[in-house]
Image (cartoon, rainbow, N blue to C red; front, side, top):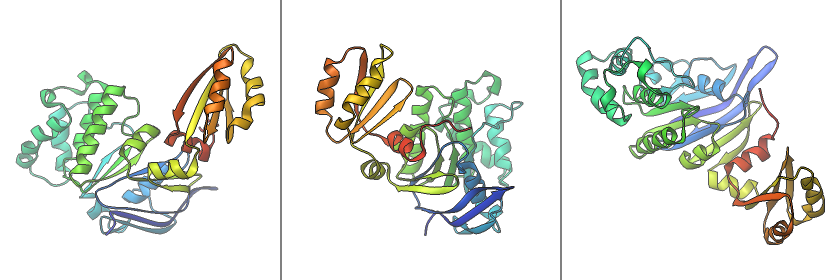
Amino acid sequence: MAALTASNLRKTYGDSEVVAGLSFAVEPGTCFGLLGPNGAGKTTTLRLCLGLTGPDSGEIVLNGHIIPKDAQQARARIGVVPQFDNLDPDFTCAENLLVFGRYFGFKDVDIRAKIPQLLDFAGLSSKADARLSTLSGGMKRRLTLARAMVNDPDIIFLDEPTTGLDPQARHLIWERLKQLKSAGKTLILTTHFMDEAERLCDTLIVIDHGRKIAEGSPRQLIAEQIEPQVVEVFDEAHGQLETFVHNHKQLAERVETSGETAFFYCQEPRELLARLAEADGLRYVHRASNLEDVFIKLTGRELRD
């Protein structure tokens, strides 16, 4: 049985259809990614799946429970890491875990027995009595993750769990999420970091304007959607790039420009690299294509509010 299934979900606010016929399934013990630009409908989709918002139409089954009818029973076995930390600043780290555990009906003695293990999982063993005002952003994020584990959930929803964190904190959270998946937990992840999705997700969907526009594993999407090699060319002499692109665009399958950078998407970039080695005023990077290239191709380079 799938951990989560969504069938033909629709949700409209005013004249805007935020979720437009979305369907997907999440297998148990996997990490499932929900990717899309700002305003694509990701957070609304999560709220629908958790029963916090009712769909206009469509069906949701979460951990064997029909949503939103049985949302309260389903959430007893669900953990949530929200986009923004909502820890209680008046409590210590341990007290935040204690109070949250009470919402699930656990006895204080049972919650207190779990707290050392949860703090150790978050790398906060020495911070049990610390006030939130003394914690860094990364520590607060890890405490939020530990709090989501108070009820030993089967499924954990993570809404942009590493936004605003430095690389060290991000890598630590990635390590913890991999541990959870190895323990059989199901992870449902939204993120704007494509390297995060590429590292963690077994499968993912890309949505835009509430519709699914791609689905598969990161490796599968890269192989199917994008050329294998990318050469990024940067204009350092202000004026050379446009001429270079015009004269050499035939050496790539596809070329995109953004500001003073050109992206040459190639099957074989050898001749292009030889020309660049002779060019003045240009700097370049040659790399393998990645999930961010797929995301940009599917959703565009324009800014979203």
